[in-house]
Image 1 (cartoon, rainbow, N blue to C red):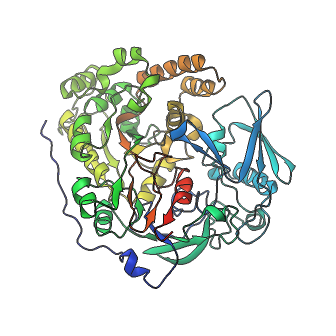
Image 2 (image 1 turned 45 degrees about the vertical axis):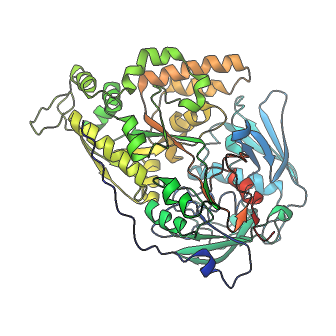
Length: 556
């Protein structure tokens, strides 16, 4: 197979002023960060929104109850909550809030707000991003500082989802008619940075909460968020020293970024998210529904993926090949079931001839003579693979995937919507195929549950395949019904076998956690020599709050 790869020229103009020039007259400690790449900012401060929410709303504007440090074995860092406690039967979980908490408008933050928030996402399931209520029986107010969540069944891992249900103020949200579409234009928050100092579609500045409970440990006065559309624009701004904290794919990073200021420019790429292709298993098109729901088709799709080329060419060698039939990934190899690889490893090996044989044996053939295969029933197969515009490493990965599929006789093409549209399509199921990723946790169960348990369908982009298998759901549920490590290992072995049998996702590699920093204006950044926690600034990683609180202006 001939690999075709187009290297785009860097964009010459970037709509961002140098940090020093833009803020020369401002003596506040302002941190310039890029947690997301978009063509325009949309003013949406709703912490329960999945698509157009600004990337600094969760964690920075609305603080979690607890931050579990996944890099340190799930060590808890108490934030709004000062403690939590399980009942003896593990069916109830109580949180006690810190004493004297206030909202940014000065009103008391109490357990009543927490109970209201959990009841709100129950009443409006579209807000339940963590799919908490399918697992919950009820929420109970105990006193001003304590509330209790009652489980339907024992689930030792549910707490990792529950602490990311962001608490909102009842005195603001109780009168909101439609909290699903509410953009929260005058936000009242609990986190370190709640005040919007400036907002335009090209830049916004988010500043410190005047009533933040942990103000003593907050040394950043504001975050400045310039609008940058793609990796190339980020590279231009970063190379010029305009950014402090960001996370992007930068080609040849030692030369293009570090080399411009070796004393201050740094990066750290710890192991990160599984990256996979998902096929919409609920597609309304008869041909695509037939093909996508056929394990033989999914196996052939997987065998057409040149994973090593994706890593070496599209990813400049930064990612790690994921050829585990279960999608486990090397970071979790200690959980590996070797029987799975022995039985199903051929389906994650790049082999166009074997892929073609798999399809032929299943009845796929070019029925109409157009040069592309049709389903066993004779229906045409033609689909787009969507990837966010400007995510150059992923765009090039999809190009390589399309080449492999085309060589196999599958009529696949690429489309590049903006990232909010891509996210919305994955949640709603309004797409054909896509490249996607999922966040990781202490064990592989966390990401497997997020990406494959049916209760997450329509709740987040991670379950983009819309895969529903009661047997796998039951296995995933049973994993956290025990804390016995031997039992969990046995269950994880079964989970891996079931995933490999079905190939619901086509895993290709594991991204590193993309993270770059600049110590010219701030110190305290996490790095390989200071590996405190996952270091990224983008949303979905609550440890970024710990990182923010660790930063100090160089003047200090």
